[in-house]
Image (cartoon, rainbow, N blue to C red; front, side, top):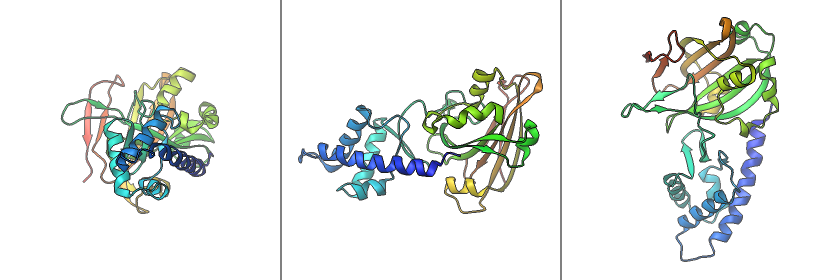
Length: 278
């Protein structure tokens, strides 16, 4: 398994060192407000390619501790960067350099509509880890294998709380992902992987939805207390010849928006059901 915590820690330290140096250059003009100096520092670093699209930025408290400015100054600067479309923020997943790659363009299951405009909202996708998985569960039964490759991700729409999801491939289908850097997988579609690599499009899906305690791993990444009860949403994907090809378990926090399902004889038929917990 790739150690995502260690990778993020090293990246975080590198970003803090880099932004300190950039801020030192930007702050030479004493006539500019401090928050604008922070905005200038980040803008310059992004435009120079020093911060890459999709890269996670340190928490505001860490930036405040590293820079000679107050927390309020950092928060005001981040708000300006969001308004300019340079960064995206989520209260649980963090702050990232804006890019199109981290937003899925063809989400098959986890997609919702704006309640006011009816526009389809594609989720942002952040990959946490890729690992070989030999645990027993419905994924092994469905795929008929003794080991899988598991892709752990966070998904969210706009400023909603994120969902935690694990996608299970058979080892033969998923092993190539074990060597792909995590940053290259953000925004990727697992269904597109199956089409492009193996010509196995998803033609039918089955859903099983229930309310029970979320896993410890999900609670950790969703920043929830252990044993928080939420929605467990299992999705089984079938391809040509009704062959099972993917298993996905989504774990949704209690305040997550209602689930919207689109399915039918045609996988993309416009039949939608809203499922609400009681």
